[in-house]
Image (tube, rainbow, N blue to C red; front, side, top):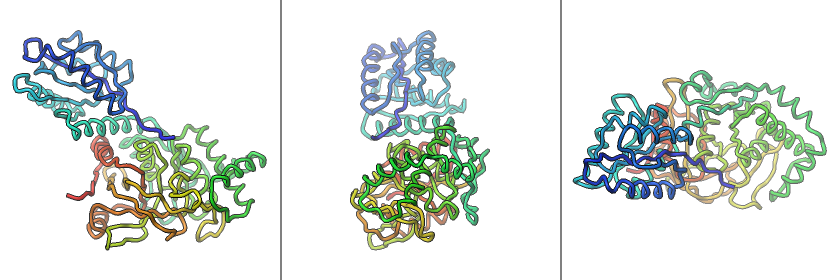
Length: 439
């Protein structure tokens, strides 16, 4: 079941009684409300168009009571800019200023005036003109970015164990994480996980294991290993619920290799994103992609490139959700590579449009690399969840850009094109965002 982020947007149409076009304000309120709802937004509309301090205050209070994530102000005519400030008094939220064609109405110049005031006061806003598809796409992307940024301020992420020794690249500054992006970090000792695993009844593990093997094409592990892995899933799920966590970063390499791979796969199918090697930033990136796509997310490394078709192969040990497999029959439960023990999930990934996200850094150095490509059919070229992605730019350019900005080796991959939302989110968070696309 796809879970999509649905922003709540407060809508007001503003006009000045003396201006040409004022009489069309009620119709514009109805029209813009229907447009925003058709985009998939949850609309909290003012009861009437705004034209003075009283109607502005009433609209503002309604937006606040409805829990609006952002405010959309559509200008039917030029209007006094202080009305926008009246609206923001009760709900200081990001703003969309929306202008419409009309040489005599002053809608366009009115938005420019309001934007100037918002800029001077340090308010977050974006300008939209007209209702062409590209303009509506910008409204959709911005609204979802705002809602995601707001949600990131309220979530908690768990770090199980510690980051992998030798990977200073994934070190996390929890105070910077909280102040810049928003999530709070909860530390969970690996001993707590092992104790929780021991506390799972055998009969419950038996039932879960039977449920799991009925969903795959091949089982190539000992039952004892499988039972321990589903106990790890059940233990992690209990910890997630107990600590109210939105996701996890597990210090799997090398101590928990093969123990949490299947658990990560099963958690992903339940909407809990779990990254590997104690990489908290990657857990955040997975969560961003999940909230925007509503689907499990691949946690991968870049392993190989093919210059002839501008494609690259990504994979990791095998912890992706079952739903990301091209065919159910391809899903195999097998020991994890290198350790040759435990249980991981192997399958070639399904084709489709994908967005790749790489998030690294801390405090003033946080940065995101975003690129959207096309996943194409691939074989089991690596014992994990290989996904081959054709890029919109050459491999040479891709690798140079990654190296130029010093991005790390962990790539999170979600199905769908959400580059617009991520670019807007980077702006909202004040994070350097590199969007790689064909010019």
